[in-house]
Length: 236
Image 1 (spheres, rainbow, N blue to C red):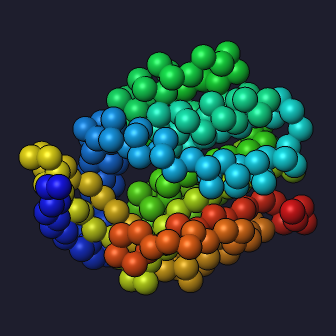
Image 2 (image 1 turned 60 degrees about the vertical axis):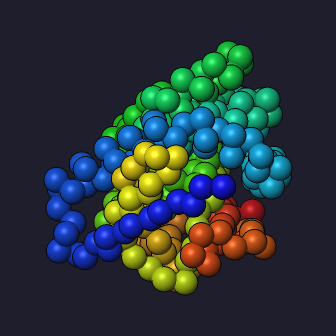
């Protein structure tokens, strides 16, 4: 097996400019376009636990609810949500990922859109369920509260957000360059501790609850965690 050589440059607060923000999301798009097939295969091999968590949250939704799958990738979970009886829009920044999603999906109730999620104008109180899987750790820290506030504004009164992301013992933002399969891919990552992540949730005024922690570590001692978010007063 070929080893992956990785270099990273830790970002400081002074580095965060509007131009850098544009660059970050361009790098994210480019890295997922380059690695589209790899991510598709990886997702297919790890769906069971995620689908269980989707069912756990989505069982409170009425049939034909409006669902947004943010960072939908190859559309595996978009299709699953469609099978559960909902109207689904999968959103992703990668054209390569969306091409796979459209090819793999045959449900009329599931559609796909290419967009930067920070720029999508959702109508107020129009969405019943946001599924945010493995992409929150690619949103710049300076944009995270803004991102969640956009979802909060669009969330219906009984709506829910299922957010799956990584937590790490160390907290930092960095540009990472991987030499993978002979190709250099530059990407951005934002590592957060559990405490830092929950501070972001508190800043939104949403009710939140940690509902699942993956038992196995991932890169650099991190683990995947699942959070449920909704308007206060709703509860599970």
